[in-house]
Image (cartoon, rainbow, N blue to C red; front, side, top):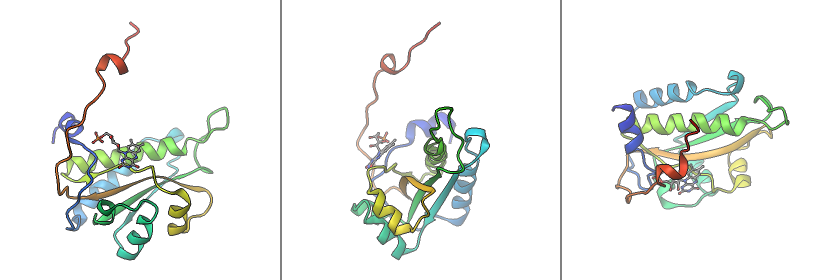
Length: 168
Ligand SMILES: Cc1cc2nc3c(=O)[nH]c(=O)nc-3n(C[C@H](O)[C@H](O)[C@H](O)COP(=O)(O)O)c2cc1C
């Protein structure tokens, strides 16, 4: 799919078919994640692709939605607050780095005809417990991954004039 077509077609999908994501497609998505830029190229990220049913069920407790539990893959984007570059005020860039890699995944999935949905409104403590993560890792976002089972309702965007300003 042409790049701008991918951008136009990508939507947050909240209904998934049960069928597994082919291994060859997963490999393309792994590459898309690894190609993401990160501050100082520190790459302080880890992406968990969870297909194991028991782990998915445990993880879904942090954001209990039928459409999440029904997806064949759950992806967890982690950022490492210890290995990430820090701004001069000490603020760690791990959330920015993980978010960029997550959006690479989201767009690559759209290009492959797969659906995703950024999820940040999950219970952090429950997600951490489900994954038994060391303290340095923050769960930045989750997304289901799979073939969309329904078209989402049309979405609107603010007019360009509200979000773009040209200081020429
Ligand atoms: C940082 C971020 C967090 C989000 N968290 C959630 C979430 O917790 N649950 C959810 O259903 N959608 C979540 N979304 C999806 C947004 O609701 C969605 O992107 C927005 O409504 C625009 O719709 P579209 O993605 O279909 O264009 C999130 C999106 C972003 C970028």
